[in-house]
Image (cartoon, rainbow, N blue to C red; front, side, top):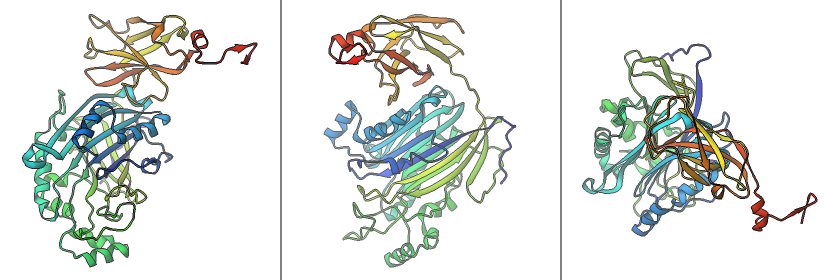
Amino acid sequence: MSAAKFPSGQRDKCRLHMVTWNVATAEPPEDVTSLLQLDVQPPTDIYVIGLQEVCATPIRFISDLIVEDSWSHIFMDTLAPRSFVKVASVRMQGLLLLVFAKQSHLPYIRDVHSTYTRTGIFGYWGNKGAVSMRFSFYGHKLCFLNCHLAAHMGHALQRVDEFEHILETQEFDTANARRVLDHKLVFWFGDLNFRIADHGLHFLRSSIDSGRLNLLWSKDQLLTMKKKEAFLQEFEEGPLDFKPTYKFSRNSDAYDLGGKKRKPAWTDRILWRVKPQNSATEEDDSDTMSTTATDDSLDEYPLVVNQDKYTSDMSYGVSDHKPVIASFSLELRKHFDSPLVHVSPEGVWSADQDALLNYTVQQDFLSSTWDWIGLYKVGFKSSRDYETFVWVREDELPEIDEAIQISVDKDDIPLLGGQYVLGYYSTNMQSIIGLSANFQILESKRAVMEGLVPENINGLTK
């Protein structure tokens, strides 16, 4: 399989880090830095985190609808100081999908939509099923599908049927790429619950302990089903060179072989699919698995997916599953490299006077009277994590390149000042489509008067 050739100087690389983890209703650990591999080089651009069995008791689930759940909090608190912003999240009972992106990428992530499918208890209960999210990344259509499929050894065919049902029925509220498989790149991951058939417990333990994991691959139900089902064959997966991630004793790296004698299995998986094209060619690489395709006859915008890592992290013990992580390098040519809207502060900003901002629409797009511009402190966690906001218009969208000026009330400006950024939020695209450069808000004289900071006398703090 030969990879597509890019015109010189037109190829960009993006690093994607993915996590799937059945957390078995546990609270998050104190530290998730190992899970996120924050200091990896080259640095990550996008984080995608899929969790299953997040605690969803009725009282807890209702409270999580009002405020962010504890798992979302720890990931946001860990990633925000490194300039990662939560693009969006979607929750269905215990299923949770989170997407974070480097702040600089936000204006190029557009048309964010999410949906979900229940498959548990005749399709009415959300303890099993899928949550998914799709968006355009520099014009390339991506979709992420976090699943929790039927459990137990004898339900392999049911798991395949559930996944096929999810693919056939999920639809997004977008004009193009309404279905999951319409997207150029799809990631399918989660607690897929496929087991290792036939082998006895003694053989399983012996193969795992001796590191001869390859002896178990032929009986892995997902690998077996891929040989029988054509639609599964379109999904790629790296080699299972890590220990089965289920079922462990909590706070231990030893398998739980208690009363139910659950056999170890690779229940937790990450697969991907590049949309097939007649002109697509593929190539094996000794270090990475790669697939190449074009999008909707746009041959000048190829996409190459290289898997750099596929493993588990045995250091976490809060659940009876171990988390699985995968990292990918996306090589792509950008459909565009300028934001839809240019936003900037005007003059000096402080809470001592009303401030001004300017915005200019640089390309035509479907705007809304509900679009707004938010003032964010540098290191903000999500599009809703603003200090204040202003509505952008009350009537028609301005002409292309027409500069619009809006006033911000001084009472809404932070008294203590600091580093901030302005972001234009599109309601229709559900994303920030324009960001200003970072700028300084000066500390207000009112901050001293109100005792928020000590008074400064002759350059010395009293």
